[in-house]
Image (cartoon, rainbow, N blue to C red; front, top):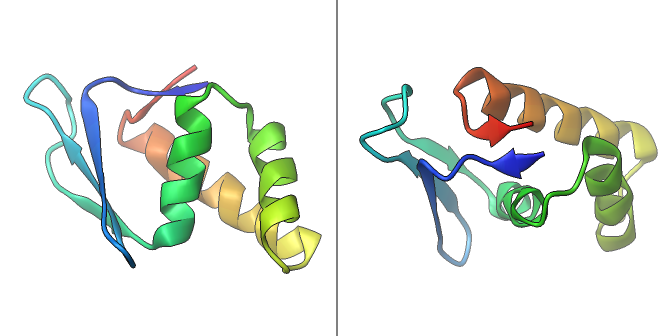
Length: 86
C-alpha cells in the first residue's frame, strides 16, 4: 500500500495538508493533524494497515482500539479520494 504519486503532502508544525495534482480525480484539500502526517509517512514507505497500526502503538500512548480505529478510518478515507495505491 502506497500513497498515490498524484497527491502532494505538506507538513507544518501542527498540521498536515494533502493536495492533489492535476492528474488526480479528487479535487480539494485534505487537512489533518500531525498524526495524519505520521500515517502518510508510513504509507510512503509501503506499509500495510497492520504495520501502520503496530508502528503507531509504539509511538503513541493510546489504547489499541483507538489507534486501530483511527488508522483504519484514515486509510479508508484516503482510499475513497484515490490517495492510496494498493
